[in-house]
Length: 498
Image (cartoon, rainbow, N blue to C red; front, side):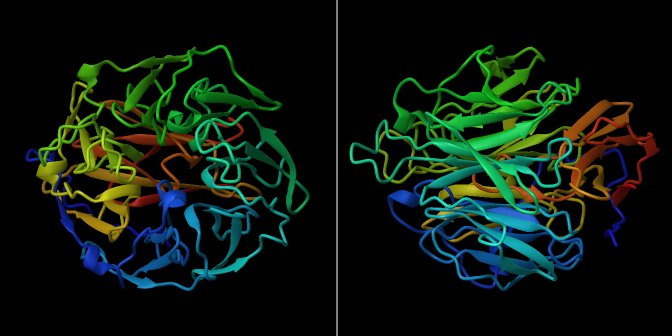
């Protein structure tokens, strides 16, 4: 049963004072720290997904040289965040994880990225998992995996997976100009199949398969770290069938660490946000290509906004989410020094960029109460207590994991959408959900990937502001358009395709 919650903010007065969060980190059963040396300077992702059917998201957090942790959600609706330890196979070396239903059995699985061979945990229900790495014939390499994305291609029972690898740890001439190759793993018969190698690699730290042009043909975008490729590399885009790199778009080189996507203009095309050292880069999707957002857009988050450290920021996980439910997507960026890089800020608080009516972003992290100075890495935006407000989880390097509960007063109304289909690809990866109201159209795609070393498999969240009479529809992965239907504010709508 999908949790339905009466939303008290159906009135048109919207969060005039801005978003507010309180620290609920004490709701974790124990401190969780992403630890380790050079091989864990990057990574530290967190996966959010419901593994026991109670409509509250669990958290899987990478641990580096410490054990990865599964935290089962025991929060009360609208109350303080509270989690318990879940059972997992013992795993160290974990850099991140992504949830998806690989075998389409109705239970979410976990693809676990590691320094060392990656692993696949098959969901058994009730937050139980079994290691099926060998049984499902996952290709094994002793690599440093830091990126993941997946999709279902037409006619395939299993997904196509991408795993992105960072520096080749065994290159005696490294680490500079020693980027490892990456893999595209095709589906087989009831297991993983053919592996296609992407080389040369440019030290990939994040990846996302999306239908960028809304053409029905998803493409693979990679964000790569020039700190180690040094020269010659760039952000990449690949066609999947057959695998081929696109050369017909403007290339950009940056210290790429994270990817986020969301339609910000109302034209149905997803923009892309890429985190980096120094300026973060927002690009507008013009259909035929991408155009850098101007500085006045307010999305660069290039220096700390508090604490007095004037050196450039370092961005990691990026994620869009409407934290005040005003109908406009906001942007969270996890930030923190790689370790002791003297040219970059050491006191580098996470950014919460709130989108205004003019489409420009303004920093709200200090006023929102989330301006801690830890070295953040992975993060997740999710409604952790079922009250219709998006909360924040942050994994830190060499500092405890944080939970931030959203307590924004006067927030707008909201609706969640869970699209489900029978057969393969049950959670409709590649589908688009469009919501229309008097304020325009919001569009979101169901994807697996993005962020920095962690992603989610949760219902899509739409803020409605003070709008009434909104409608929504699902455009399914094969392009079939569902009927427009009235929105039911204050609940998660489960839309099933038989």
